[in-house]
Amino acid sequence: MTALEINDLNVWFGHAHDRVDAVKGACLSVNQGESFGLVGESGSGKSTILRAITGLAPQWSGTIRVEGEALSGAKRDRRFFRTVQMVFQDPYASLHPRHTVDQVLSETLHLHGLDNIDQRVKGLLNDVGLGQRFRFRYPHQLSGGQRQRVAIARALAGEPDILLLDEPTSALDVSVQAEVLNLLTDLRRQRGLTYLMVSHDLPVIAHMCDQLAVMRNGEIVEVMSSETLRVGTPEHPYSQELLQASVAV
Amino acid sequence: MSDMTLRQWLLTDEPTSRRHARLASLYKGWLTLRSNSMAMVGLAILVILVLTAVFAPIIAPQDPFVQDLSSRLLPIGAEGHLLGTDSLGRDILSRLIYGARITLYIVALVALIAPVAGLLVGTVAGYAGGWADVILMRITDIFLAFPRLVLALAFVAALGAGIENAVLAISLTAWPPYARMARAETLTIRSTDYINAIRLQGAGPLRIITRHIWPLCISSLIVRVTLDMAGIILAAAGLGFLGLGAQPPSPEWGAMISEGRRFILDHWWVATVPGLAIFTVSLAFNLLGDGLRDALDPKDGGQ
Image 1 (tube, helix red, strand yellow):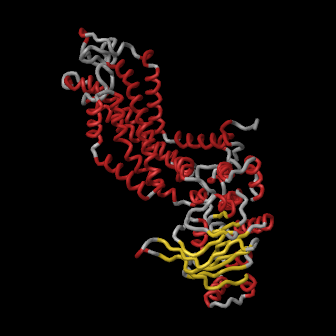
Image 2 (cartoon, rainbow over the protein chains, first blue to last red):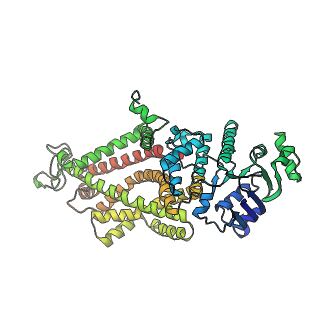
Image 3 (cartoon, chains in turn purple, yellow):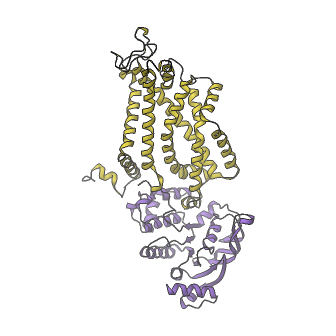
């Protein structure tokens, strides 16, 4: 079954003269339980696709289907938020500076109409590898990796099926990156989640994803399996260029 | 926890409950404030002002309203009248002490009305955007365009002289800057990822504004209010001086200056002493506001 299907998606910002087309005619589909990667350089429109899905980029055309249901406009209903959640790029900016971890998670659980909040907060903290002692800390008392774990716990609170990951590790140290990626891999296996992951880091995508799409200037230039990437035989010249640049580093 | 002092308990990085986390964060703010000695001077003056107002009947040596024409315009240090007497022979020190109540009353009322109104208008305009923003902000601009004291004068003239109307008039002229500030803060906050994140959990605008935007606006608002308090006290005194605020025989400080103005050359203390009181309290509010800015700044995450 297809968890997420995008057809001929165009996303733009601004009006008339100032209009910038961030995504042009993108098509992709992600099966249930699959992990799909979006790669490309900065400004290629990878994150914009995620923002269009979640309604944060309101100007778009084309079709987006989540578990078979088509979305429209920028409004999303409660059911959508129970199905799709997002982890943001910068864990330093995605947590409210005046809310403790406990407040963040409790409020999210409350918004999803779940009961037994106390127990669930404890469970979530354990699931993302943070102990109970982190529960009443403020974000400034946490490291970047710990913050991102809190952000992941928040995304998982409503027990979604699909997780959109917007460069979840790019703001973190290399050693912490691996920890967070392993956590994400484990969570996917345990909960049968579907991932749509954005990254400019090819090794990360190759490690995490089954399929990936290469983007340039708002267009998807090639969709391939990560096996193809590992063997090093992408077809499109831009994909080869990207691969070579990544190997050189 | 038995081998832990209260201080260690408050400064821990690992709070064990919601209450603990809140107390710890308050205590850290207090430590920042305490390290600013000028702010502590301001705070001390304001605490003394509040105590004076509360215990006025006990502290005041004389009745502030009793006239004694045989001992009028006595100089500072006269027997039984530490700060002298005014033109009707009333003890200036006693009047100052009772005047603290009126000053605090004005300050408290304005501090309750103006920032709350400004916060509401500013955050709604900033978060809603579009037409709501345009309409609310143009109204704010209209209020901002009037000179403050002139607008207050007009309100008092329309509503009648008196301390309540003076407070109302000052509040009506004081809210626009708060609205502007709250709107500017809201505009930067509304596009941050933590607001996007809570929107993705299905939170509505009301929850986002009251639970997520207000807590971040309020600290800078508090700072601004304390800095504005000096201006508010002066505006109240100005209205009193013009005879449109507190009415005689009420010992409002501005009205006292106004009465003393007639004798300013021969009996300077009658106008100067309440003037010094206004100066001291205004300065105290400014000093405290400056310290609060450091202690409450949300940008450093409460550290």
